[in-house]
Every structure is written in structure tokens, then in C-alpha cells.
Amino acid sequence: MNLEKLLTEARNPSTINIDHQSSLEIVELINQEDHRIATAIQKILPDIARTVDYIVAAIQSGGRLFYLGAGTSGRIGILDASECPPTYGTHPELVQGLIAGGEQAILRAVEGAEDSDTLATEDLQGKKLNSSDIVIGIAASGRTPYVIGGLRYARSIGCQTVSLTCTPDSEMDRVADLNLTVLTGPEVIMGSTRMKAGTAQKMVLNMLTTATMIGLGKVYSNLMVDVQATNLKLKERAKRIVTIATGVSHSQAEETLNAANGSSKLAIIMILAGVSVEEASQLLQRGHGFVAKALKL
Image (cartoon, rainbow, N blue to C red; front, side):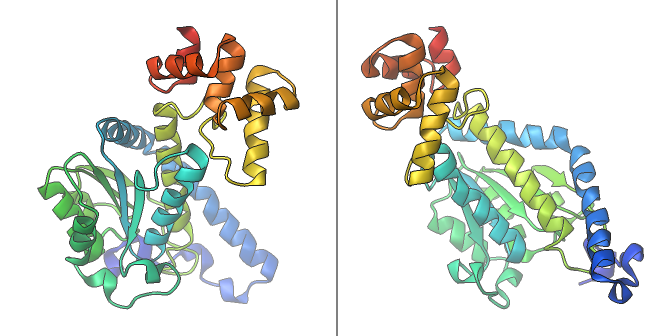
């Protein structure tokens, strides 16, 4: 294992004396390094967009999106996946995050799990992975055996595969169909990839799922119209979404939402098209789930 050859394991010359700095100077150095992340991501936006298109196509064909990772990378994948159902009303199995070591590794490291090149295969088989699915492997170093093994298995059964790394010309890049390589450079503290690399991974996954959900019709204008109103805050958000989209009063939005069984999409169509809930449902179906398309019918 030649860590010295990995960009994410390089020593950062800008922070050599960070242990002699004041608290303000330390956080200023961290902030300076963090500014590099967005620029690094900007350089691969076409590849990110291409990945979004792959994900949308996979889901429209009945497939699912899986994230594979270990440690920080695995936790970031799980975080992104877990936010999709409440935000966009997706089924919990549509976007899933798998981490080396299983659920217990979310809170506490499971020693040696990431070094197995067979565990991910077992995890994916347990999820009944099939060729309609798409698998994104996440690892700052691009060399994590757990992720590499999972990508190889996914590709062997015909899945579309993507690598998300922060090191150029990695082993993961050679295994996956499409590479997302965000060159964030050496970390503030050598090898602490939960910092810039982890932030970059989170930003990319935000882009992937947000753009995917827009592509699936779960956004009208910039409103999350498939939000699941499962608590008081989200119920109020749904009312506000309907109010903003249609210009009606808060009370009328609430009344229409009740008639639409809590569906912001249906409530918006009912108000703007002046139709019943049944007619709104038919329009939405004909518009393939897109509010804007339904309103043009």
C-alpha cells in the first residue's frame, strides 16, 4: 500500500505550522483550503451531469441507485440516501447507501471491513442487485477494496457503475464505467479525508440526487412538490409550497391539501387548472408526474 502516491495522503505545505497557530489562524487556514472544493467540482460538472442522466434513465427503467463506501464515504452515501424519502417522497429502497461493516459502522468503525473485496458483493446480493440498477462507489483514495469489489460485481451483472474519488488514475477509475474525480488536493491535516474530500463527496451527491429528482418531476419551479408531510414543520412547508405556487391563502392551501390527501402536486394542479382531485390525478398521470407538463394539457 503506497500511501505516499495518493493525492489525498500528501502533506499540505500550507499547513505545516498549523499546530503553532491561534484558533483564528487555524480556522482561516481550513477555510482557505475549503474554498478549493467548489472549483475542483466545477471542473467535472459535465461528468456529474452525465451521471445524473444515467441515474434518471436507470430509475425510469425500474432500477435503483446504490452508494458504496467505507468510513466517512459510506456515511455520506447513507446520509444522502436517507434524505431522499422525506424530501422527495421516494420509496426508501429507491436510493440506498451501503457501508463496509454494515449498520453498526455508521456510528462506530468496524475494523478491517473496508479491506474485504467480497463483503460488498454479499451486501449487494442481499439487496438483489440487478442490471437495471446503478452503483456509485465512493472513496477518497480510490483504492478501498470493499468498494472495488462491489463495483466489479455490479459491472459483472450489467449494472452501470460510477466511481467518485479524490485521487487521479485510481484503481476505482479503472473498474467503473464513469469516473467522477474531484481533485481537492492534500488535506489540512495529512490524510484526514473527512475534511475536503468528504465535503466534496457530499456536494457531488447533493448535485446527483437533486438533479435526478428534478429530472423525475419531483420539483415544480424550485419547490419540492413531493415533500412528505410527516411532521408539523413539513406540513407547514407543504402549505407554504402550495401558497407560493398558486397565490392562494394559507387556509385555502390547507383545505385543498386535505382534499388532495396531502399531495402538494395535486393541490397545485387543482387550484391552477380549476379541476377536481380526480381530474388533477389524471392530468398528473398524463404529464408523467411533472406538474408543469400536467398544467399544459
